[in-house]
Image 1 (tube, rainbow, N blue to C red):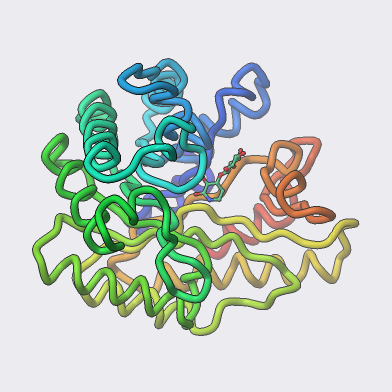
Image 2: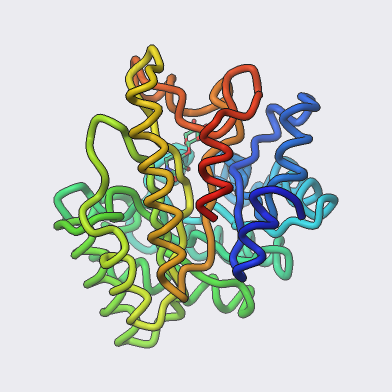
Length: 314
Ligand code: XIL
């Protein structure tokens, strides 16, 4: 490994990237993704709307392409994701009761079995909480009659299909102290108490210059690690209001550095993943109007000074 990955590996961690097959033909993009990182998360290719667009019809072509890319460059894969309220097909949201439970378990079993042995860690359940710490009352919550219930069942189902994959619950706005982080902490405690096969918590870490840095991020992540869980930064980016300014760049550098340092201070923090290579392909501008420039390479796919900042912080 070179660059970011080499620096992470020197401390027993990894440095990963969200990779999208849509840009595979861009040789600059693929060159960076294939050399600077040692972990790959498929940006969309393993989500339910792609992998099981209609009931029982599985489509693993795009996800397989991501795994092949990773393996060709000696990188590992974080599977993302099995159960989420977004990017699920209409046939799933239309289900209830036993039919919904069966669909969830069948989906997990099929997908995890397909990728058995090829996935370092799965985001088994993605974004189960609202920002106030209440559970999202999605189709899975409703079918199982509660958050802990469907999440425990999803973890057990995934574990049965690939006992060696690390199993995560992943969410955003849980990086700093607050109601949502407390809700995740309580969920983790309850799952462990009942013996559910939970191995880690993913902290997405989609930050914004204008919102401030999460309160006590290191201490907050550490309390999860102290439960005996791995913790990871799974979708790091730091957006700003366009146009990019040197003052925002400076805050962005500080936030990236703080995120690197928070993980480094926690022995159970296994690594970082940035949510994309370069600003031109980032999900930010199309999701947050007027926002952008969140990544380490710019829109011309050239390294920003931020790249060196992050490399030096590692
Ligand atoms: C985003 C992708 O980056 C976009 O391409 C897609 O249109 C929507 O999803 N939290 C997650 C990721 O867990 O799966 C999301 O990825 C970003 C927010």
